[in-house]
Amino acid sequence: MLATAFSSATLGVDAYLVDVEVDVARGGIPKFVLVGLPDAAVRESAERVAVALRSQGLKMPGTRVLVNLAPADIRKEGPAFDLPIALGILGASGQLPATALSDFLITGEVSLEGGVRPVSGVLPMALTARAQGKRGLILPAENAREAAIVRGVEVYPVETIRDAIDVINGLGKAFTPEDVTATLADPAWPIDLADVRGQEHVKRALEVAAAGGHNLLMVGPPGSGKTMLARRLATILPPLSFDEALEVTKLYSVTGQLGRERALITQRPFRSPHHTVSDAGLIGGGSIPRPGEVSLAHHGVLFLDELPEFTRSVLEVMRQPLEEGHVTIARAAASLTYPARCIFCAAMNPCPCGYSGDTVRPCTCSDSQIARYMARISGPLLDRIDIHIEVPRLKHDELLGTAQGEPSKAVRGRVQEARAIQARRFEGSGIFVNAAMGSRQVRNYCPVASDAEVLLKAAIQRLGLSARAYDRILKLSRTIADLAGADTIGVGHVAEAIQYRSLDRQL
Image (cartoon, rainbow, N blue to C red):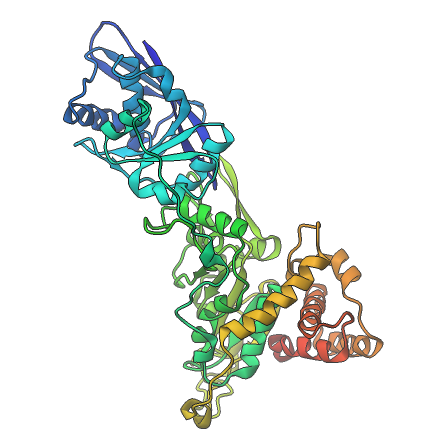
């Protein structure tokens, strides 16, 4: 007898439907055959399912069982097919109404006792279930909150195979979703920009970076507060919209990093990989490519501390995501594209010892050592970083003073107003922030006053700026003007933007 259960698997950040076709022969030698390009974890489901069914008091057919996972040209990974295989066997052997299986998309790993364990990638699976017109989604109880984010499909959490049988027979109870979108409007951050003493010019640079989506590099001695400032950049970004939160949650879902207690990521992500990270860890990779840190920072902040300590190859592969906002990974099995639209924030010392230009401790590095240290950051990578800002050592009165700076909420309000101006400017173009403008948009939306144009030409000649750096200054000027509510870019806006290219001035 033949029965078909429906499951799903992820490919990139999306999921596709998998037909679990089960045929139980009427006679012959007992044998379990699994086809459809399964990996080792899927092939092992034969033993898990057989023991799990017996543990639940159900019968494992004593004849030949053939299971086909279609489409057969895509490799299947992981234990998420255990539960649909088990229910398909029950349907094909007459222990369950086989026709009722078609109403549901089923996923879950089974234990030897017949329990159902959580799996990764449930959110894109729920979206697939809705797109395929399935009435319900049968899945592990620990994944229910994540799947319930998707409206239009009923979620049936189960803890055992017996619970799944009850759902198929119409006895199951659908999960009642909670409203998890309320925290999007005002996310609760445990840190605040007001915690940072002094460094007002750096806080201003963070505000400009957040308002226009600009990449940022902080240069300063150890202990000047670079990491502390970077960690608070995400707190002044506008709250995630529901669509943005859904995109971020999908990425964390397919990598198994969502956490069972969270249904939706409601805060801008902040990722800070160690400098020993590999190319694949940062950008993504593997035989079947998985998202890397730059994609997990989508709609948030990617922070690289001690930038020159990262290997040259790791830094150079950052060029595509910084420029295009996505990462394409090509393999023999698949070519996948992951979103990577984030603010890139980095920090570094001005020299190997860290005290070049410091007012307290003398630098022990030679000019050649400093030159080699700075050369670890290539010119093309620097061109893709809009803001270079110096972070000096705090003075004693700033460090010991009691004055509080502006809280993140106040700065975030101004950032939201500037983002609203950009949203109206770029409506319908697929661009959302000034940093994403191409050369055509720069010409159309960056009108420069005559006195500002004179200053800009002088800066190009004096600093020897590349064409890309010139565009960066114009985009920065546009963001500074938006924060001021100005339509035309004035001389003050250009002057501030030029100040944010400190490495260009030094080099």
